[in-house]
Each structure stands twice: as C-alpha cells, then as structure tokens.
Image (cartoon, rainbow, N blue to C red; front, side, top):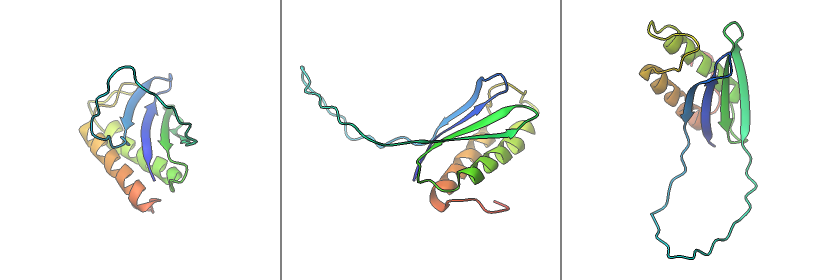
Length: 126
C-alpha cells in the first residue's frame, strides 16, 4: 500500500505544508534518438483523497492522498493532527496560518507515514 502525499491547508485555503511521501523508483536513465516512438498506455489506477478537518476553531484541514487499499486513513489523520498539535502548535516560533517549517514535525510525520504503510491502523496510544 502507499501514501502518496500529505497536505495541510489553513483557514484561508493556503497551503501551509506539503509532503510528497511516495516517489516511484526510477529505472536507469535511458537515452533516445529523435524522433521518439511513443506509445501511450491507459492505466486505470485510482487515488483515495481523505479530507480530515480536525481543528474547527483554527480551520486547519489535513489532506492525505493514498492508495485505495491503504487501511487506517482515519486513524492516520488523527495521528497527523496529534503531530501537528505537538510539534507545530507548541513551537514558540510557529505562527498560525504560516507555513510549517519544523524539523521535528517533518521527522515525526514521516515516521507516522511509514508506520501507517507497514502496520495499517494506529491503535490508542500510538
């Protein structure tokens, strides 16, 4: 399963945080001569977009783009809100409505995404 991206949007609709978590593995670089023979193939892959508005007072919205088969998205949204509360809101240098630039927030969010991909849903106390 895969979690592709996480976005945090402020009350005004501005993007204050973006994490592109899933990067497809690239193959070896190939060189081509011109003209290129291109063949386009249609892929029927879907992406689940999970919206989680967890902070109605501040109007912060959390958006997760994930594989439809990924389990535990709702619990992941709760965990992201917990990380936001712990590492962004409690940071004395962070101002509301401003972009989130906190290394501890980044580290803990990446760790939570890895745990979510491997283990599925978060239990209480995670």
